[in-house]
Image 1 (spheres, rainbow, N blue to C red):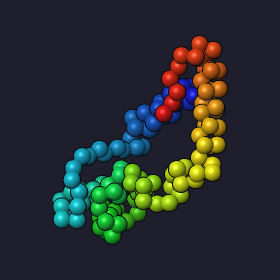
Image 2 (cartoon, helix red, strand yellow):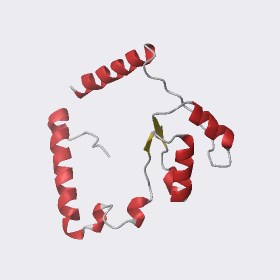
Image 3 (spheres, one colour):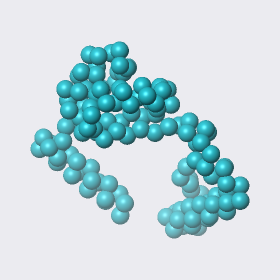
Image 4 (cartoon, rainbow, N blue to C red):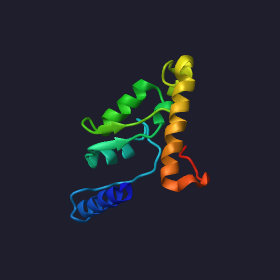
Length: 129
């Protein structure tokens, strides 16, 4: 069932792209406020969304916001931090010693039961990470 849903979503996306309703521009480059050519190129594309990966871990917050605004003032920005759980209390289960084992046990139990329904009782299966 989940596979069919994914196939349908990919097919729908392909149809939109082929009809010219969605444009995707992939670019790999260094980006900073001092590299105005790249900033101007991005701005000229009038992006509606931009993914910054985990760049937030490498530049100061103020610099990131200035850079993001210079690329587009209206785009939806997507980013994440790999470092946040290590520097922010409550961003990880490790921060909750009373519930840590209970939550981990419940997750393992749910995953194990689900995988058994997919794989039978063979007990040879890979659990999702």
